Image 1 (cartoon, rainbow, N blue to C red):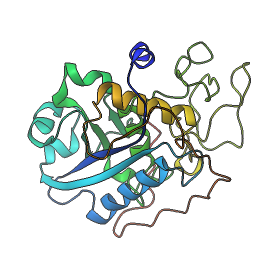
Image 2: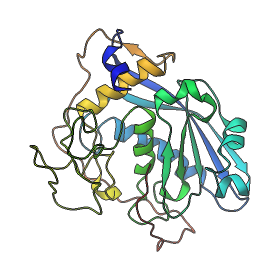
Image 3: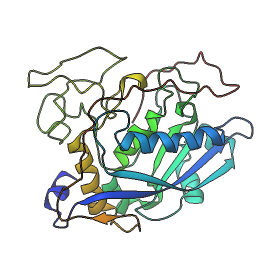
Image 4: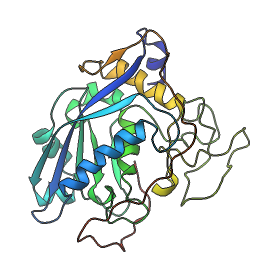
Amino acid sequence: MNAALRNHPGPIPATVTVPLWIHVLTDGVTGAPDAAVREQVTVLNQAYAGRYGGVDTGVRFELRGITRTDNKDWFRNPLGLEDPMKSRLRKGGSETLNLYVSQLGELVLGYATYPNWYTGNPRHDGVVIDWRTLPGGALRNFNFGFTGVHEIGHWLGLVHTFENGCSEPGDSVDDTPFQATPTEGCPETRNSCTAPGDDPIHNFMDYAHDRCMNQFTAGQGLRMRQAWVTYRGGVTAGLTRSSGMTGLLGTQSGQVPIAPPRPLTGLADSLFLPRGRG
């Protein structure tokens, strides 16, 4: 993927608008309420616009529809039953983000496909997240909706900030310092490599608690738009091309504090599972 992004001859889009379909799985009783699903879309657009901190990445999400499917097997085992689930529900082409909201196990909160995987298996393209990670959900420390933000970052071509540890090429983004291992919890600061710069513990592509995450970088925004035009074709009506980077990466003058998530009626607030984002 790195070589393809470096060698792509076309212009880098200043903004991209991603068509979004959300597929809510339930067991007939348990599953994500519509209010939380729509709040997740708001969180995605705020996070990628730099409203919590960091930069405006130029990426936006346009909700095209929400489907609801009662299937207890798909709800509780979306990874094991990925093929029938996605074959039945998936909509659109390479440009369309299909977000599946189900219930995952104790070791994973979500997983995603990378853009360079699309041609090899287009049917499985998309992102799966645990419904309890939606804003106000039941997973304490992971219920601001940032699991969705993180996993969609992968779908758009980002890897973890701790990729390759302290060794080149790291996460292949110049403005995220090297990081030896994932962040746990929400430390005040951390520096795990001898290279300059503290660990990017507030980055959405790390593993910190949601309250600690608030930003993408300019380099990450650029990489996502490069991946979009390289692999996803720039085929949506919302795509605006630019021959350069003018007006593309406006940094925030300060970081906006993240408000606590609104609780969802009827969800236990005592659940806690360890971070397991893909």
